[in-house]
Amino acid sequence: MAVRGLLLVSAVLAATWVAVDGTAEVMSHVSAHYGKSLEECRKETGLSKEILEDFKHFWSDDFEIVHRELGCTLICMSNKFALLQDDARMHHINMNDYVKGFPDGDVLADKLVQMMHKCEKDYDDIQDDCDRVVKVAACFRADAKKEGIAPEVAMVEAVMEQY
Image 1 (cartoon, rainbow, N blue to C red):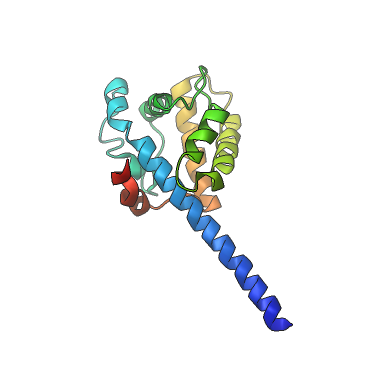
Image 2: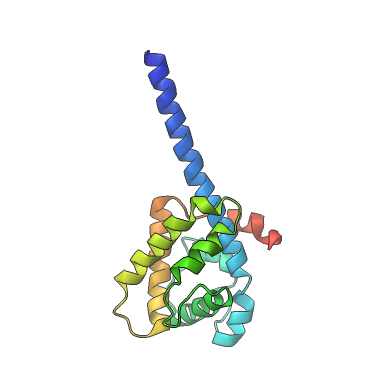
């Protein structure tokens, strides 16, 4: 009986571990695909390579999400995939569908939308869209790291060639 209980606990822990790794892997696909629009948007917003050389660095602990230009670039990038409404806030249905479009995206889509929405509510009082979006992005990255769904930079690099 004790062995059966131990096996059950082990199975639950293993399933939880796979789910966390799985969501980080899905996030790596989302990030790699989303990041493909960086260069086009860099030109439109004037974001320098000194601020962000490559989108994969968004997930690096060393990268500070503080520059207004980054917020403007994220708005541009999101608009390339119809992920924002006219008020530069997330389009929940489109974001959910976008994430579900990646391998195993259904395991992450709802959680990502909920987390992003929470961060948007936290900074809803900021009138300037670029300033607000950069704060939302910093909040989202911090929460994603806490929740264990943030990919390592190497994970994003590993899937970049697929997009």
